[in-house]
Length: 211
Image: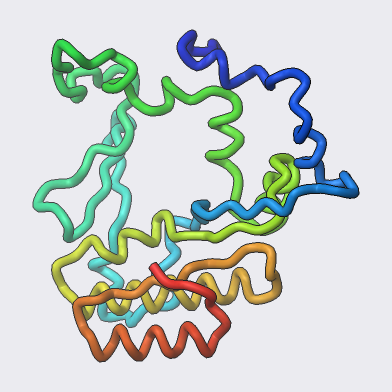
């Protein structure tokens, strides 16, 4: 993949940095590195198996046109949101302002470099996340939702509560047997009583923080 010239600096490590070896997992005097803002790469159906069946037909979802254009459909917006544009659909790109470069407006897949692609794929399962953390010298991660953030993509408080609950129970199942990665429980604040109950459940279940 061709590297975008303005990002070439990202591919070069500085020379003669005294602390460089202390990021290596095998180093006897390694720094303790905690990543405070990582995200989990959930499956597309992260809510489906754990939510009240009454909500199944309202869950956020991806829809793909026959030409490959991808749209996110949720109750947050009146119209579907454009997610991915195939090369032949440049007509869907907004006209850039004079101060904007094409890179800003291009489909994100045209702006990803090899390291971006690696990070984008990381975190689909715990083994993959461990491997990636080790390659970066990261010992622990505070983990936030990714697709799970769509739990807030509705004006219906009860629906948002249900999606947050579903995500939390999915995260508990995934991370129950590791202390290396700490998921932050999602809380829908619109219903105070339900929010307090979910915070209490999260604390009792071993979650260390909230989103």
